[in-house]
Length: 81
Image (cartoon, rainbow, N blue to C red; front, top):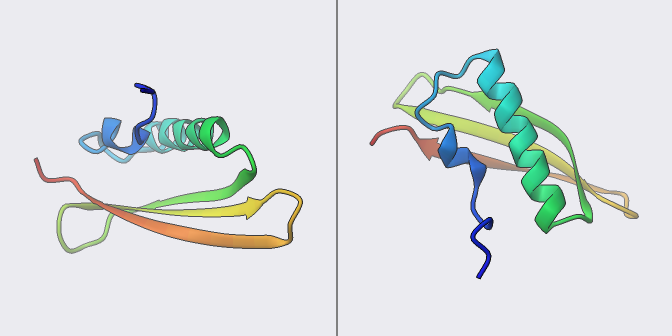
């Protein structure tokens, strides 16, 4: 069992989305991906707080190393307790 296999996103869900939190969350996401999926390089991480609901939206753009494949994923997390 790997106790380090978790998403760092939930550590920041209740934090205010200021520049410091965005920077730290971006670093933690990149670190986790490089640890568990080293063949993927993250090229961009963007954060958004939609007007409706208490949500955090994260858009991650990545590239598969040694390939010419670029893709992205959107994650929306509820900030409600």
